[in-house]
Image 1 (cartoon, rainbow, N blue to C red):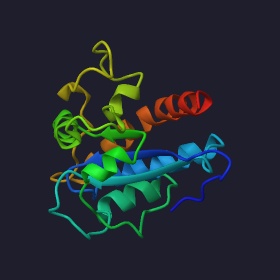
Image 2 (image 1 turned 135 degrees about the vertical axis):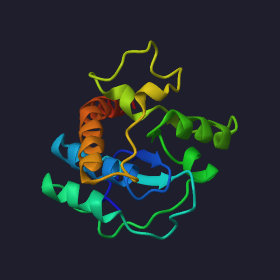
Image 3 (image 1 turned 120 degrees about the vertical axis):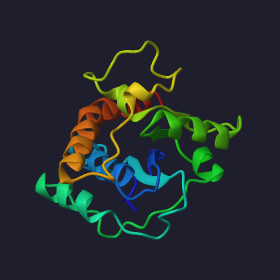
Length: 180
């Protein structure tokens, strides 16, 4: 776990995909890197989960690790896939699903409990389709591509989509921290 300042409560971010071995751990690694670069590494904790338990306990997909390494990121070797729980949703400030389907499942899982803001990952990408209020919809046009069934180039596409939204997420969290 990332060390957190005792002066200010940690802001907790969770990325979510299907099995927690490709998209969400890639996003976790990229976001940790960006928060660190922005000077927020000691104030923000990032983790990831999946909506399914089908990959429970498995490491990051080797193709995802390869893509991260080729772009200078840590490879996530210590990661083990796990399924999101209702408690995860109440213990996070911001939950970032990779697809509209994931967002809908997370909203059902939250079942009206107070907790995290659930917002699709790519709503923070300035080059993604603009669809109105990003917090009020779950639109599949904002899905992060699933590279699982394809070749290595699919992981490059996924990483590009993740990187495209990362700075917007950092700025969103910075504003939230400034408001605390």
